[in-house]
Length: 327
Ligand code: ATP
Ligand code: MG
Image: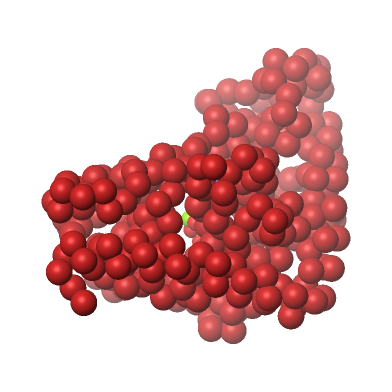
């Protein structure tokens, strides 16, 4: 079986974008692959985060993975900092990463904003750690949202360059798996930006744990325009963002959806969309609360996951050290 690796940062509230762009696809193809899914807590400290919140978020995220349908029979789930090989490999890889390559990363520019001098270097080196997360497991496929395309390209470049520097196949060259629908869900407040956990405005995203009332309120106030035509239209990013969510949730085509809402207004569409979201999240939330009521079992799954995959990470790291002349 081919191996799949992916992860999410325990930085805050997992949202509909994370679900549609990532988790749902992991669940859909888990039986086909050998899967490793990580809670990337080392990435979560690249921006300030409260220690207690980080610890709790990591467990919550693990519970959400399972609640969304990941099955421990098919998947290894673990917390990144439990496998110290990630940090060690990342230091070595930092020493083989041209600054010019990192200077081109758009996520760094977006997240650093105007704080280029005060932001910590971890944020700058984040793509190198991400590359190592993937490369340590000789990963074939990396299912992610569209925003990670550039980091995946960098991962491939780093792997190829390292292999050719030492003329050895230390790393498998991974391929991104980015779907055409749902790979970039936009912010409900500003539909020119992607939906993000780290958005300071909670109205910008639907949290997977939002109750029906909150979902109704957020969809109700989501940015649209004054045209009132329920149609996909790049010139009207607000309604298009909501239609994309609907398309991704229902699996229907653009034409079917536009026909369904022909002659209807934004209010009608928003009501149907709200119901669709509420019904998608209902079973996930029920299962999540069950899982969170038994933390020892959850901790057990995470420990087992880390124990099972550590030897693979250790063997790749050893190979890296051998070719470099370390150890
Ligand atoms: P943060 O703001 O902390 O970076 P995030 O929402 O970008 O949070 P990540 O943990 O960085 O979430 O990404 C987890 C996964 O979700 C990745 O595969 C990423 O590509 C995907 N993803 C993130 N945002 C979206 C989105 N708006 N639409 C679709 N997929 C997304
Ligand atoms: Mg992100």
